Image 1 (tube, rainbow, N blue to C red):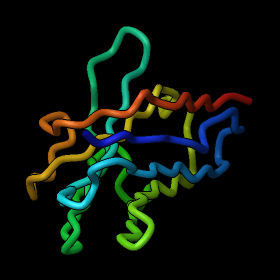
Image 2: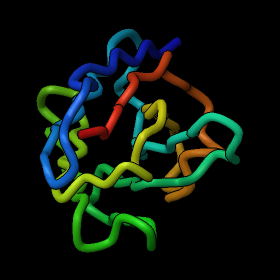
Image 3: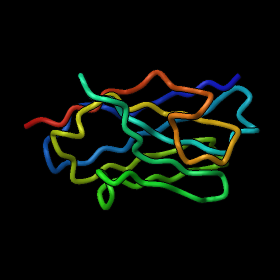
Image 4: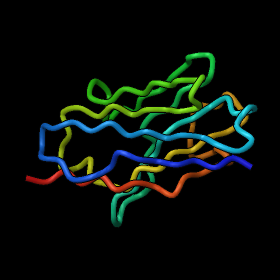
Length: 121
């Protein structure tokens, strides 16, 4: 079993930045892909970003140019750097992980509990 612990969410003004972190523990040795999706109230889940252990990555269209994903394999941690935040980025952000090399976090086996990001002035 793999446990994912997210951190870094909070309240930020429009135009501001936040960095989310997600640390994997437990049987994380076989984890290849890690990523983030978000869900705002009343809206569908949206894939934000994903990265594999080999460095392949995906960034969603709505956050392209503002968000970046990175990974520290030695720390079993994935990061989501969010710059130029907009009110429409407000959502619960979930970290997911999987044994595959798939870049769609919604298909991953292991899910975190989520961290709330609120963008408001």
